[in-house]
Amino acid sequence: MSERVPFPVLSADEAAAMINDGDFLGFSGFTPAGSAKAVPRSLAARARELHGRGEPFRVRVLTGASTSEDLDEALAQVNAISWRAPYQSSRSLRKRINNQETSFLDIHLSHLPQMLDYGFLGQINTAIVEAIDVTADGRIYLSSSVGCTPSILAHAEKVIVEINAYHSQRLWEMHDIRRLPRPPHRDPIPIQHPLSKIGTPFCTVRSEQIVGVVYNDESDGVPSFSPPDEVSSRIGDHIVEFLSQEMHAGRIPPEFLPLQAGVGNVSNAVMAALGAHPEVPRFQMYTEVIQDTQIALMQDEKILGVSTSAMSLSDGTMQTVYDNMDYFGPRIVLRPQELTNHPGVVRRLGVIGINTVLEMDIYGCANSTHVCGTQLMNGIGGSGDFVRNCYISILQAPSTAKGGKISTVVPMCSHIDHNEHSVNVLVTEQGLADLRGLGPVERAQRIIDKCAHPDYKDYLYDYIERSPMGHIRHDLGRCFDLHRAYMETGDMRSALGG
Image 1 (cartoon, rainbow, N blue to C red):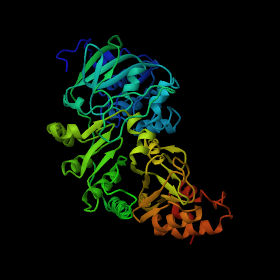
Image 2 (image 1 turned 180 degrees about the horizontal axis):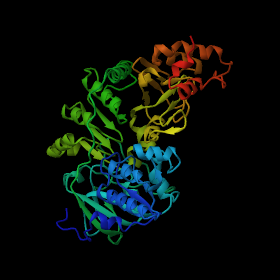
Image 3 (image 1 turned 45 degrees about the vertical axis):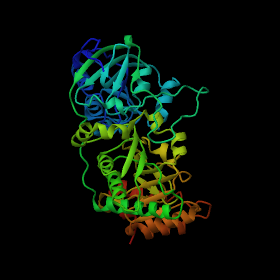
Image 4 (image 1 turned 60 degrees about the vertical axis):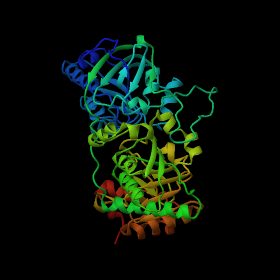
């Protein structure tokens, strides 16, 4: 690592002053992990000042996935984002997107790097990336995530590096950076094992691209997850029982298969259940994000190793990793999202995917992104990359939301992100529906029987019986009655009748 940074040292305000209205900006970050912090905060302050003087200032923002509140939330609060891709989780930004104040491109995370490479998204003016070090010859050692940062750097005219002293100087030991060439010059990706390394521990840019560095000493600020509640625990138990049965049936090998798990409390609960079950052997993960529970399971040697694009860990857990780098360094690989989410690698390794959805319909389609088909929540993220390509694709959700006012099992999804051709298993706290090998009506009966909340079962069975005959039985006049009832009364149960 370098002893002295050979580039101009800037304040965050000086760095923000280099950015102009209308610029296309690429930021590091995949969840709050590795997200740029100081410069976007100053950029938000600059936007507020300019707007106060009646001057325009809005920028296009590209990241790997969601980011910290210092980036998306800070900029959205001052209406400084005109366009955003590919995923977000900011309350203020979500409101502006749904009010059509900010244009949002919701795309699969594995597609983003190649869209940049193919020129579909245009030229990035400035990249602002968090790192632990940068060298005179343009090697940038990233911090707690990789995401799309290597591709962002490759397509940026200028680069500003936030050097964050909070992170361990040994993080480079985990990184495996490799960008894929454009077709038709692509060879098979030689990842034969979740911990295979095929690249370098750093990104590379031309030194003249780097216009300055900003020093920082802040954690990623990832909040701790709540302990698993009863609903999440029951979902986890159903999934563990299913996977155990698959092992006994010989459909999962004795050494198990790599797992992928989405983010959130439900996924944490599922991972905890897997770790506690005596019949689930020690396993590895090939995923896009790891959270606190995975670190605890690694300490217990239930998880043997993880390939991921981000360590989205609370401060205490991150410190545990940094204090024990001799142990965790060889067991965690941090890669670009075009590798962690790559369909070919996911298919080759036989990854079992576990992701959370907003709603599922009776024929096996699922909605990850839009409430009542119109209001964006966060985006599709990487779930589609895994659902379509996993050895077994498992989608989970509580059977109801808002105290029973919403059924997550509906006749037809109001927006479809994952169709019935890709989904293998649906699960709620009520039970688990294995859909493999079933025709449409058989799927519907199993989903209602196993996954729907008792309050809604009779309605859903009646819907099938009264729908016109066909390969898929739907009544286009009634299929959204539950959604309409919720929009009109705030309670889907108002559509159930007496």
